[in-house]
Each structure stands twice: as C-alpha cells, then as structure tokens.
Length: 535
Image: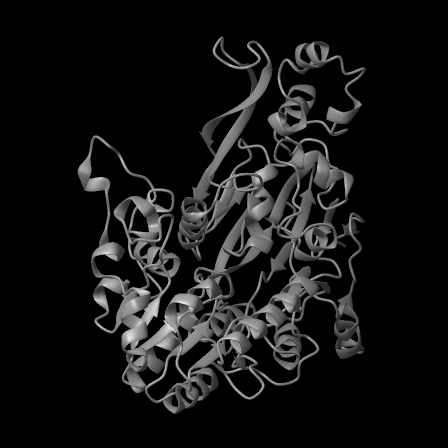
C-alpha cells in the first residue's frame, strides 16, 4: 500500500513536508520551515528557546509529532537525570519531547522510520527544518542546492535551527574549578557533518527502495528541481516543488512540462502559490520598468531590494545598471553566493570578480571605522571566506575590503550607482545621505504574511524619513514572482494528465477543483497528517 501524507504545505504557502510511503519504506520530499506556523507564535525578538527548540515546536504543532526522525540530542540530553538531581527538579516532564528519536526507532525496529529526504531547492520553506532531523538520515539534493545551504550556514548567525549542513550536537558537561559554580551542569556542542548526498539532475538515483529523478525547473533561486519518484510497485509520483515559466530559465520548466506530457502519473503534487492570479509575470517587464525608474533618478541614488539568493533578479539588475550607465553595487551575501556557485559546472551567473560593472558594498561594522578588525565576526563581509586559519594567511580573504564600495563613495557621487539594498540593510540610509530625486525599487517577492507586510510598512517609514520616493514615499514595486500563474499551472496539469492532483503550497486548493472539474483528473485536497492512499 502506497500513500502520501502532507505534514506541511497543506493550505499554506511554504513549509513543505511531504511523506511518501511504499512497502513500509518512507521518503520525505522537502522538510521546510513553515512561515505561517512560525509567524503565528514567533517574531524577531520572540524565538524558540535554543536548548528547548524541538520541544517548543512540537508543543505548538509547528513540527509533526513523529517517532524516528528527530535528533536524540534535541529530544533528551545524555545524563539528564544527574543534572535534574543536582537542581532538585521533581521530574523530567519539562524535558520530555514525547517522541522517540531516530536512534531509538532504529534500535527498536532494526531499520529507520524514514530512509531519506529529497530536497527540491534552496529556499528556507523547503529545507530549513532539516536542522531538526537526525544527521544520519540521508539528505539528497542537487549540487546547487547544497551550495546555497552551505552559503546560508556560513553567513548565518548560527544558533537554533541553523544545523542543516553541520549539526551542533548538544551534550551535558560541568563547569570547571574557576567558574562561579564549579561542577554545575551546562550544555556544550560539537560539530558533526550531516549526511548530505549530491545527486545529478536527470540522473536516476535510489532513495528508500524507490527510484527518483530531479528535473531542473525555473524558480527565484538557482538549482530548483521537480522530483519524480517511482515506487517499487511501479507507481509514479511527481512533485513540482516551486516553479515558473516566465523567468530567464523558463525553458527548463517548459522542458520538464514537455517530458511529462501525457505521461499520466499516478499522483501530481502541484504547487499553487499563484493559482488565483490570471496574468503571467515577465522578467522582461521587470527590466524595462526598473530601467525607466532608474533613468528618472538623474544624478541621484537608485536603490533596489531583492533577495540575495535571487540570481535571476541580480542578472536583470545588472542589465538595468548597464542600460542606465551605472555601476551595480551588490550585498556581500550575494557576492559570496555567486563566488561559491562559480565552482559548480554550470553556474547561474558569473562572479562579481568577472563583472567590470559590479562592485560589492562594504558596510561599516563594529567600531564603525572600516577597520579590518571590524569584520572578524562576519568574514563574508570582507571577502570570499567563511572561516580563517591563523596558521594559513591565505585563508584571509579581503576582496570586498580591498575593492568594495563604501557609503561615503556612494554619497559623493550617487548618480553613478545602482545599489542593492534590502530591508535588513536600511540602516545604511543614514550613511548614504540619498539626495532629492533618489528612488527605491522593491523588486522582491510579494509579502506572504502579516510580518512581511509590517516590514513593508517600516520600509515606507525609512523612505519618508530620508525623502525617498515623494510624494507618497512608498517603494516603487516592480515584481515578477517565482511562481507560475493559475492558467499556466492548469495547462501544465492538463498536459500531464495525472490520475490524481494534490495541491500544496497554496491558500486556494479549491481553484484546482474548479478548474479541473470534468477533466477526469481527481483532485484530493490534503489535510495535515492525514494519509492519502495512492490507488
């Protein structure tokens, strides 16, 4: 008996966690962070507790309560009874996760509960909660997706939920004699690599006794792929991940659609982020409109906000900068990612070092003096290295420090630059002194939740304070989504002719029911945690 159980992505956009089961073998398709689930309970200054995070998320229903998938160190620390005896805690109820770990189930059953996780692409809502899974569960993904996750981890702040590539295994230790409380218990960590395996696109690979294949598709992050799985008894399941037809690599999605034409798979799990939108987007329109807006900011500063993983939007902004005679100044994060992806056989864009019209923005940090010592804590701000070795001076990379653009240079000649300035860098406006006539363009994805909408409100406050975009001081929105429109999705589904469609990553699964009525294609709207039998 084969079945599909959606633990995330049912009735929400993102947070995809899809469990495929066949002959008692199980594979997860994505294991992402739920923006809606996290946003319901948390915000920037209210986060899961570092050493209680798994239990917190299980208690709030943000993670599925499943035996056999989570890390032992997140469920129960070793020698916990000794520590509780020392502190006088009456029982272990506050430390109980009420699930069995991966190791416990392996010992009990002689085999793991889940055999592998296959990731579709490098967006947090598809991979981030892999950090909670046991590091022994194989994670399979494309090389680009692994590189993106590595870059995110290398440039991140660490802490709770960041253990995707390397796991900070927690254990109990005791304080030494020089501490205020010698012998008291504390939590320490040891870095352990996760079992991540790179698989080639359009190459069949085995996962949990099933055969799988990644099909490259276009999305707002490079390396995105749809996943096609064939079970041992011959059933075919297609999982689209996130896709679009209108981007620079739209031909990849078209090739995927053509390859599946009239294939009649048993199940098609289709994303439906923009199923309620009639008009397809266009990256060419983004380029044309941004060129118009930047051209109007004669002698003033032009700024644009977009995600640092969005290499497609970067390429579009590079074209805008060239058409308007400006130098594109990008964030250190984007430059770091482009450098990392350049090591792959087929990088999505050339690194900054090979583009004469692109520079990296060097922020003031720490002492705020542009001192080299200011960048030790965020090494990627200074150059192309996340780690330095004191014994090897060659590991100290200083490309951004040596040739980057500083705020005072932009302020002295604002009409020369098109600056990549995202929401979390708005403090830079204080140093940039944007002159009258400056423009700010928001070219990022549309807000999906209340928190992001509040971010847009704060963005407007910053623009008003510095007189940018008068008279309304609102961002100039120029957008092309990372997702296909409704008609494109429905045409795709009709062309594939699956026996069953399961809409995921959407608020409007009902539109699939309406549009596919009378086609002979069954639509099964998933409910979280309810198995869907595959006929």
